[in-house]
Image 1 (cartoon, one colour):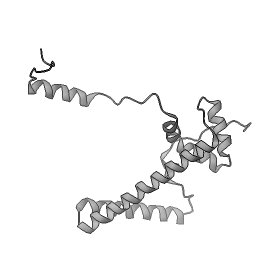
Image 2 (cartoon, rainbow, N blue to C red):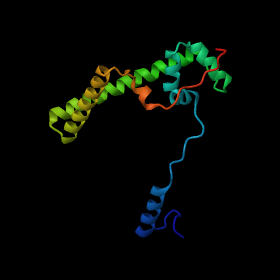
Image 3 (cartoon, rainbow, N blue to C red):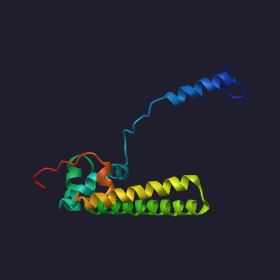
Image 4 (cartoon, rainbow, N blue to C red):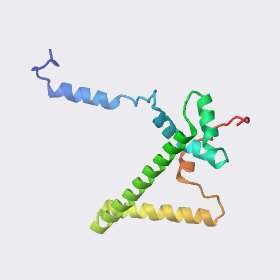
Length: 149
């Protein structure tokens, strides 16, 4: 019987099982730690904060909806996420610069894409459309807040 310690497994079986593993659908995550939950909702929370709600008000709303958190903790998490995101962007720019200096083909493509994004942002600002942050463009709908907050 294949599979026990010391037994051999045929290449055909390995290839077949590997192909089947690749076909398995993505299994969505069901349970999140508090920090992960806030990270998942960071864009929506940022939008609500921009609309004038305080960290304490947002935390109260979250707590009323089974996500127990205090305003100071929410503020801390969001500032940590922002700091990490800005470090990632900085590293990405540095890596593009290094690749460009080395003459890499992928670096040329990356630089062209970066220029295209910059031109797109500049033209949308000139045309009078509201400039939105990256998180505004990548997230679906707003978080609905009750009127009593």
